[in-house]
Image 1 (cartoon, rainbow, N blue to C red):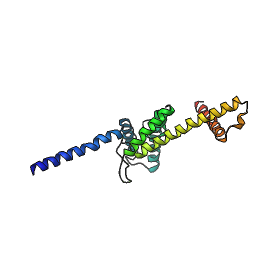
Image 2: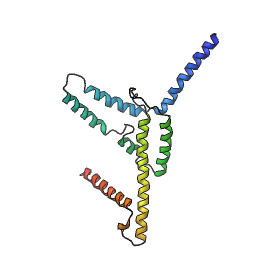
Image 3: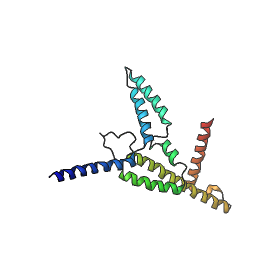
Image 4: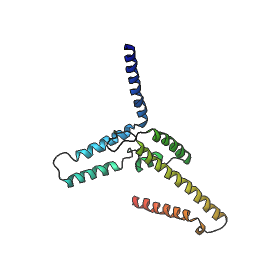
Length: 184
């Protein structure tokens, strides 16, 4: 009987350690530091006797302060910094890696609070969406450039570009104008 108890205790300790090792894959220390700072300052907005307008203004200042932070996983800023400059092949590889992680990641229920720094399915989904969009953009650019080169080689006007390429180039021009407008 004593042997059975020892085995049961040993097995429970071993099984308890398994999720901890797996959870390391889904933890980001920078993300945790960001979330602790952001939510800590956000909670401070509610301390003391303030009217709702002051609380809302305080929260808006906190959001503006941390909105530029690229440590927030799954956000546009994080994705742009982490994946924006990767090659097509590197993006495809990273997408495969994130897919495996997402399939193993935990999805927290409506009433469950995700611990700070833990990467869950929605975080992986957001990053995967960014990467898929970036892959599509790179492939569309390559297609449109090849179409443009063919027209030039044939001595034809760019007016004959496929409609999707015309839209793509208009979008690129708009992005350039927007980017240059930010600098002035």
